Length: 479
Length: 119
Image 1 (cartoon, rainbow over the protein chains, first blue to last red):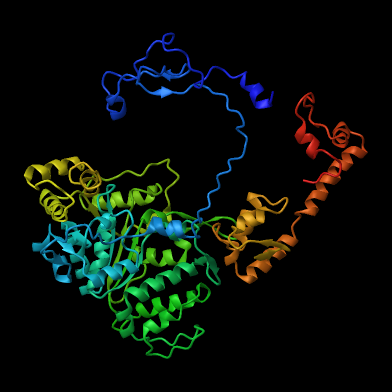
Image 2 (spheres, rainbow over the protein chains, first blue to last red):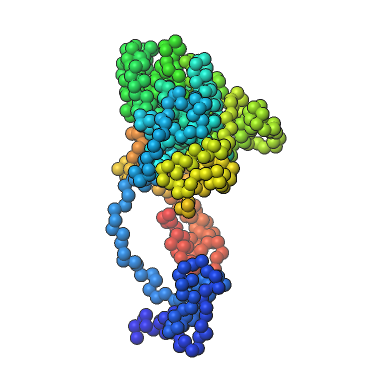
């Protein structure tokens, strides 16, 4: 007898052994009520076959197979996956792709285009505004659209003009008019539309021909995933991030090309390898950065030129999403193996200095940061400063600093002492209604948009939390 | 392919993992070396600049790793055997050193415990 056959006689009676039907009682496999269509269709098992002996029937009607001895389980599985493995970076690109148009969605007639006037117009609050194509290209170039947002459901990217959007746009307009720097942090609950409001701020800046430095994710700067190097002759030591600086310059070149072409240099820049005589266009200087190794001096030169006083520079917007990542110790290590504080990273430092008011933009502009609730570390100091500011603005009562909490950070508190906070809350019913009408006009919402439907979805979405409304309405397949 | 201390590494390999392939160089030491040369933990071997590779090789050659580290372990075992301790004798016999039972499984001891210990 061969070995496997010999072992088979030791097998326990298993599913393969059939026992006559008359010995085994017929078990009803399904509960009296079942939502499973398969079981619901055939509540009784076919008469001819007896249920296997070691099958366990659990109370809910679920079946669990009994123990079976497997022979030859250590044999190698011969099936080899011959498909080509994804190339390096391919899966990430797929995960991070942003689709901005859906040809199956209906085009919405009569949508107004976003324009500098429309963004500050009180008449336009609560209307949907379509992004003009040129602006879409600019926003895409700086990666202001996120893969988690639902752009891929509609024909053309359009945004709801909210009350807060107009408020923010007006503040930016006023700051640029007076040559001051607006220092603002957008806070609010989860899914309330903070990143979207930041996108609108960036859009406003582009539409008004501002220079924009947009950092799409604060964490990319601080979670130790790009190059860094200590900058010589700085005390305390600061760190440059050349690869990320190159990325910012690329954003700038793509999105602000026309503007940069018209701006001319006013400083000689002897520190650069290439010679740029005074009066060269800034685009040419920015274009000189091709390799990360040579980027840092060029990045500095471009920033120095853009913030030159009395040279007729346009207003500048510095924007950043995910503030709490740049308000704590980064994951980088110094040569002495200590964690580097994010504020010692030079790019972050420039942003934070502007936010704290230590440096100013000579021709005015804005520094806008959005907090994030989905993926962000706890940051007691930042939360405290935001809460204090909200209390000053009369939005809540004065917060108390926990006396025994050692996770507060003085540097963060100093940086955020003098900021404005825009607390984003839920939308009003009229805003919700115009958004739902847009959904219906795009063919995504197949009910009549009336008072009842609006208040239904408004209540279902956490009393007008836009993201939750979207979840409750668009992202479920039940209409 | 990149040479670090005479060893050839694939370009996609993380620098940290490449360093940890050397005997007696673990996660702690490799993190410290990365910090010393300002290499971020996600850096791949292929994107290291040449001067950093040279510096890394110089750093590694000044450390007690690979054969130097093995030699220390072997010397310790040899010393134990020469002074005739139980631990030394058990090493020489390829048996467990710390009072384990030897009735059944002593594979690890058979593999590792010898005077000229390899790993």
